[in-house]
Length: 486
Ligand code: FRU
Image (cartoon, rainbow, N blue to C red; front, side, top):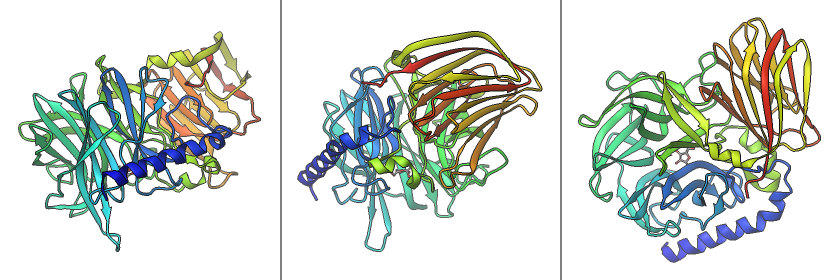
């Protein structure tokens, strides 16, 4: 196939998106202010970049079905991280080196041009996989010319070798790639380049049970490496880690190692692995530095599990979305995530309750829509109390002060009469910032110390959020309705 066929595929994908407009906007679970696919399935964020004053988000996209398949790179841009415009689809799976999917990757600016790096996924008739790390380039950030593979699979790895993240450091370019070695251990490898075209393999950077790394599963996806607040941070998505108590309850994990990157010896000295999110739907996070110097993270508000085929949005021919953009900070050896302040632009219809005390009582918050923000501050929960927030009878967040546990419960998609839970230990609860959209919940605990991200599918007739406390809980609360983003 050639570039002409690539253009044809892109046209077909965009037409498919236009044709779904009407159907999708009738969906009660249609999100008001999140990035979502115009039709079909969206997964990982790709190529996050602030390029010539515009924020760009690309994403893994199957325009033709609500299942996984040969992925395109969908594309949208924003001048404020709040309102997003759909752009022409950036990459289509059209060439011999990417015919079964333009898989995840990243973007970097160099000499005024935008370079995309992605994994060309190729399968033969028997389903055997090949992998190529490919490049595409753009002058205007709108149309992209494919340059083909720049890296072939090195020895010692299976073809599960993907998701290049490129960045610059001290005048050189570096690339980290998620990999599986031939012993079937997950790991992350490092390449270096002077010009973005020629890459030298520097070895395994982290994982794979070498140099004292423990068992972190059979494959690492979507790595990211950056430095923040004098710490180096390696984000990875390990597959094959078994649940341990409250930890690792989702099928795959997304988390980080804090440590020190040794560029001379191509090694990363790390502490322990910490999950980035305590909820149900969070995967493949990626970060970028914006022109104001902020490190911003966006993740897929979803995960490849048995639930994804059960999302009710599939009746409207779409599935999944991105999280809201979050600023990343490192404090006290922990990574904090905070919603970017630009999201305040969405706020309207304000109400506030000062110094509320609940002691065995229940408070109903009437809601008109399902897109809102709640900010609890000055929280003071008696050490025997049990405080809970019930979201439209579909999901509940509860703090058990005695056990020092925060618990998110939602209805199971598999079996509507049963519930599922995620729990995180937290010594004290002082603040909650909660973003609700028609079918999503993002809860920022104690100024971003912990986050719960989840999709929820409440009944459209439910119109109240219920607060209650067994034992004494005091707080102040602010509530805003949030406007649709455009
Ligand atoms: C993570 C992932 C990546 C891959 C992409 C394919 O969700 O599996 O490793 O590049 O999705 O869509």
